[in-house]
Amino acid sequence: MRRAIAGDPIEIWGDPSRGQDIVYVKDVVGAIIRAIDSDNAGGLYNITSGVRTSLEEEVKGVIDVFSPFEHRSEIHYRPDKPNMPATFLYDIRKAKRDFNYQIKYPLYEMLKDMKKEMDLKRFPHLIEREIKTKINNIG
Image (cartoon, rainbow, N blue to C red; front, side, top):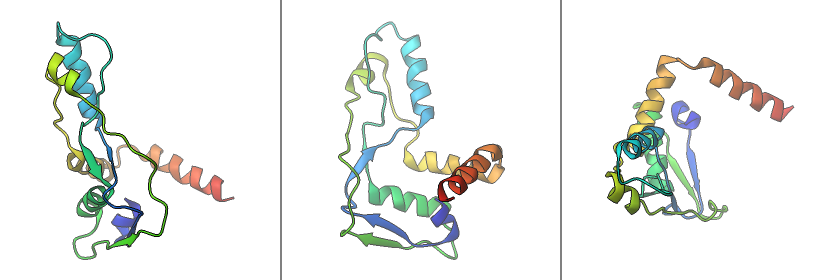
């Protein structure tokens, strides 16, 4: 995200079609509320998106939301670099069946909310902590 904000190039290592199951906390909370309100809920559930988002889709979303319009980040593909480890796509059919679990906030909505929070600067202590951690790891 920082590279996109700066308009810097972003590298995608390995196979850009590899992806992961990304879920937004808003959907997780929604699932918990639905499960509590349901007479059918019981046992264990996978609460994820149930959708594989490719690394390329993820990076394009980050660029679309965070990169300045006049200076968009470019994607540099690096198939020679190691790819992300094996990823999983979780089966959410049981949650759908037992309490009508549905994703309302796909990745793009999550990214827009993240941008909004960054613009509002409501959590500056988290940014300061991240900067201090990076400084300590360098030194």
